[in-house]
Image (cartoon, rainbow, N blue to C red; front, side):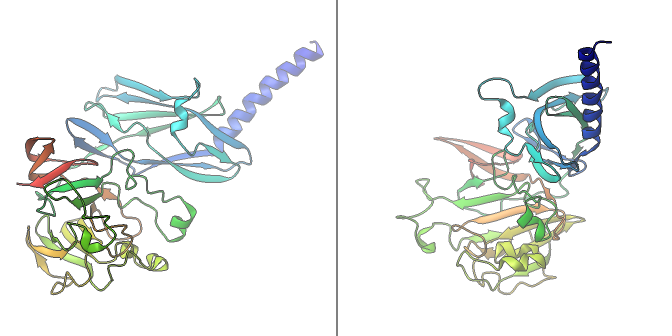
Length: 355
């Protein structure tokens, strides 16, 4: 065999060996283990994350991500991908795609809409154009145990929900600062920020520099369903601040004043950024009825302006995961038109009001 041929042969063998070795050093898992299928406007959405670890000293770059959607008979429904082709490669829609040596980071599932027939998703991650790692995701249906009403009576803007671009969806619990505080799940995965509008569709009077300029400041917040209060804070000022280190012992401190109501096993509603002393008279253990006033909109905690942060979650600990919520008897405003909804979900940008 010629020296050049030997060199080429060894390069091939070495390359294969290196790829195999690198593949063993990449670990991929997804959270939650069984992502919830959320039904929105006739579509099915999946909101979950991949955690990718590189245990080698080599740099690994994600160059392609492909997904195969399969039905109950394991037959292909759809196939989608992101890759590095073109002048503006689609893989660049994933911001964190390089693992420099030993490292671990999170990416958000980019294929957030799925066909309703989907029973299983098979993902193929390609690193450095040659190393393939597969990960299978089996989603689950979620049945809300009780009917919910909206937590506010006024006309509302869903200022931020949990769509693909929402900051609630993009809570990176692998980010070092967040991780050091003890978080290891996305409790706000299906959360909402509700802002009250006046009859002209405005959020505030003037420049909105003061809390009282906002039409929602002080509006009554209502329980979405019957339940029991299991956590409450009422003494924080409406000054848009909170004690960051306290998150290590109380992950709810982010919300300033808050009320958490238990509606069933592992089903809790959380109402955050409430007005100072607006939940006076309530206490942990209080029984609550649907539609009962539990506080007022404020600006306590991590709040840029007066609004209600509402979320459903499965516990109140650092490993809490969010849950979807469907509301009964509300209207959606579409310009001069209005559509009445018997039961449905809402999301970023919707203008809504309880009937």
